[in-house]
Amino acid sequence: MAKKEMKIVYDEYQSVCQLSASDRNLAEAAIRATENAYTPYSHFNVGAAARLSDGTVVTGSNQENMAFPSGLCAERTALFYAGAHYPDLAIEAIAIAACRDGKLCPVPATPCGACRQVMAEYQDRGGKPMEILMVGAEKVWKFYRVDDLLPLIFDSLK
Ligand code: THU
Image (cartoon, rainbow, N blue to C red; front, side, top):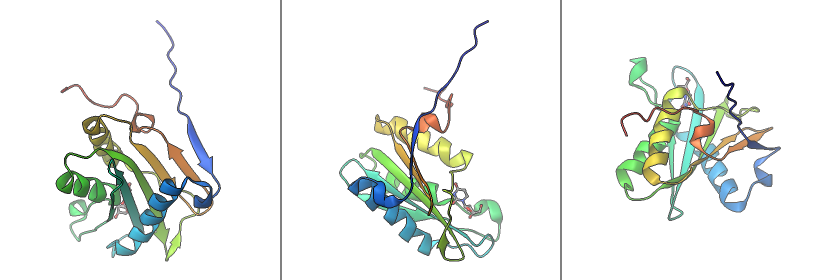
């Protein structure tokens, strides 16, 4: 028996102002995207913005439904849009932000398991690491690859 250890390294910033220009642009697009969320049930507005390999930024927001499971998270809305419209471009980074009562949450919102699984597949498809920015009003976290959010990613069908 051998004890194994996994290490995750990520960056913590105090605000979006400390990010590089392109990351800041992506973070701000995610914040703006929260305004298009449709959340009559949770009132929790999530925005996501994905940066593609040619610099294009696409956004998504959570879209709820009275039949709850029919709704979709912001991240998957953005990722599926990118996959549907730009199938040949890698998704290099995704930023996520969440607002309550019109205010950016202080602590970053973290993506749900299903969104992490979808990120994993698009990362694999793009052939390069996908960075993830989780944007809060008091903290911003930057992860460098989906593997760090979803260790031991399911890829047995490969
Ligand atoms: N939500 C997202 O948009 N992204 C996540 O990663 C987690 C949760 C949405 C789904 C639902 O509309 C609301 O937040 C409350 O769960």
